[in-house]
Image 1 (cartoon, helix red, strand yellow):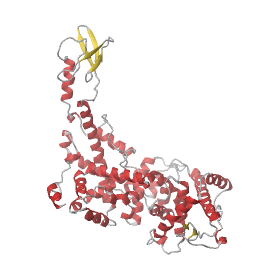
Image 2 (cartoon, rainbow, N blue to C red):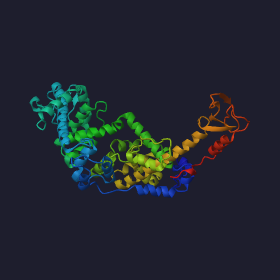
Image 3 (spheres, rainbow, N blue to C red):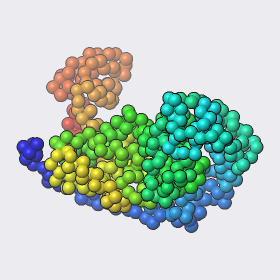
Image 4 (cartoon, rainbow, N blue to C red):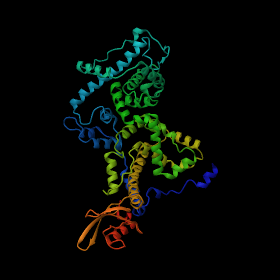
Length: 513
């Protein structure tokens, strides 16, 4: 290992020229580009009640959803309005609904959650009437529940006092259409009952063994597995749901916002999805800091498995709970994603409206840029690690030490840098395609034969068709430019030569970024 370290001469000099390839204009203006990226990254105060109220029209609709998400991304949300803003941010209320429509939606969601929860509890108690539902750590063996109680103590209350009769009937129909099998409930309880008692026990809402809020976590997570059986329960969901419950302190509202959040990230909770996410992170790190990527490879940690919990839990364990909640809302604003309005706008500004091939991978979510930002901010210290175990230890010690706003600003700079790089790569690829053997460049050449004009198809050899319908097989000559069979002479015509010279002299100096 020491030999490899010395041969590679790490750490390399701080040179990011590889991030701006094959473009003379940008190679001469790297400082200007970096300064532009820095100027585009800034933090603002949290979204205030006055500003949030100003975003609504007279009937309660949010006038501009983009402006709302941009404000959340820039500074988060003040605690005073967090519950109301999160209901919009996490899909509990669509942003275009009126205040009256939202009351109807609230009633519907509360009744539906109560019916879903009642459904799995009834199925469970029908099979195991002595199952003690009052214990969050209770689960089922093949022979029965781990903790038993008197059957009369487990009467499942209707819990529909908040629901109107019509909404309650609709909710029962909705819940009865959801498949519910005792084996599924049994499996969910087996895992959830072990994780819930360990959830943020230092936080005041979850302290003490008989805390009823632990039952809320247990019931909500089991209900989620009923509603989303293809995902089920994955370790770590308890930490995420806890954040929603801390904000709302309402079981039903926290549940539906959690469901909405999971629909946006659920693939990352599946094994193949997480492997794809880790692969995307490696690709992005290679793109933005190839020297660091190479060094991680030397240390045999290039797989970045230690980043698994970062991506799975949206960095919640890297920050205190209050900061983690603010980061969750910032990442969930989806303001600065490659397929978002702002991302497309950044890409358009980079390309100056020139037509390019799209090389940007929308798999690179902003959370991946956030992860790469952590690496780049601490790259000098990572280069001091001499093996994989030291890298692991260093990354682990960062938990609780990160400055969130600093990482966010670095992530934003990397985002804009990637936007510029992807546009440049598009031009590079376009040039290579033009000059490659297999690329078919089609153009029309006007051949002046006396008073007649013939339009010839220019291709890399093969059949060419004249305007009069005749076809001729033209052989490739020196520069591989075909000659139409009706055009006299053995040498390329003036138009042919002109296009040949243009392509050979193709330069990116015609473009500015």
